[in-house]
Length: 317
View 1: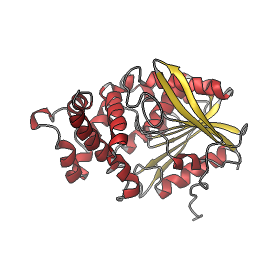
View 2: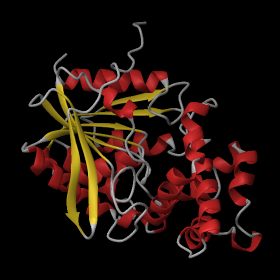
View 3: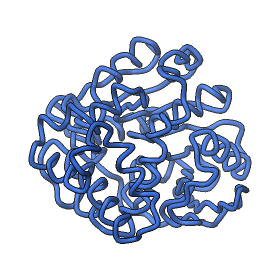
View 4: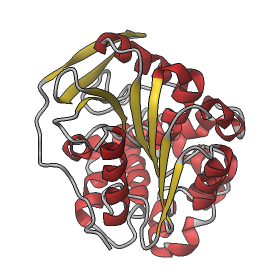
């Protein structure tokens, strides 16, 4: 077997700034690589996760000009943790504003986890603006997917972590964990908000890798990160992502002319593999890679290998 591909070397942005997208929101963006090279946009997870330095390293900087941005309310975007005018469709419109700012007719769209959800929503809305799609950790925000992570499913594999996730919620409210958390995450009491945010965020951080990886999971416990992450994610999921049930798979026929790659870990806990498989069946043009011995995180060796190979391939390497 050939050697597993891994990250390109660390790189700093050659340009960055804030874009006023209306509704009181300003979003932070940065560009890395070679100005004027193959255009791409990176969509981070969460919702509410924000971009990280490792995300810049998924593309050959000699061949790509990549725009990365913090979605509304998270990372360096302002106002922090804001839920006002913050929906899937606001974010889809923001991607179009950023494309126009960059000045390209189409670009590669790369998204993992919630980023795959947003990438699908964008590509199905603006298929003529997408040169290729690179998707990892497929999530389509259906009710069964939400229940799997926040009600019953992952709870069976991580009973000790699930117990900690349930701890801030009284027994009487545990029949609908997302709604119970939402009340606390949007309440007036800051102490309660932060306690709930950390419990929500830590639960996710501890189930995204196949084996424990403190480097990946520890940041989820930081109060500032957790508040934006938990508030925004819960806000999106309580509202079903403002998608009709099954919409992203139903409309996958709109991707028919877009080349793509789907990468998914066999043991991805937050995002069950059956939805990646369903997307593969609905969009046969995309290459499909189900990675054995891998969970959810983009940094897992088998997943990272396939992602780097995908971006290399689409740049003509």
